[in-house]
Image (cartoon, rainbow, N blue to C red; front, top):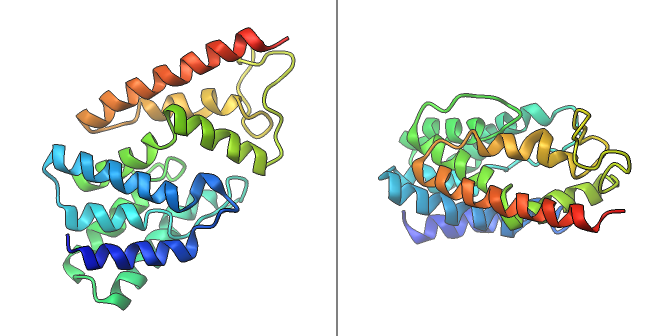
Length: 210
């Protein structure tokens, strides 16, 4: 992977990612790229596919409460390929990059067909877990103006989680389920570690609630 390509990717994403959504700011992309590179090395995958797909995976950011949410990864893939074409990135990688971007989304529910797609999916999903996952979850809840938790049943012991209403419910509605979808060996190992961080946080939170 030539450094000048990455400079172009980062420059473009810096135009797209804004501080208005801390969970999808430029630092999110940098973390996903870093993790994707680590997984790429451990899985001996093609960095010429993994790296651009990781940088451009959320090229079109659709808010969580937007009805187009399930189509966000498809929109991102289409826009990313247009961008890659405009800068002359090798066309032989375009289809694989598009698939990796489109398949990374949890809500799109698209099965990964390549190791590169699995790596990008794992890298993005790992950023929703652990300490950074907790921070991103509450940042999103703040944007949606959601209460932190239900006063009646904060940890969904006797009710179905509803993350459209309560922020903590998102742990049970999605995040713990996401951890079970990780595909690479290294990703699964890191996912288990990050889940324990989240469970420890929730256990501590439970002691602090009235």
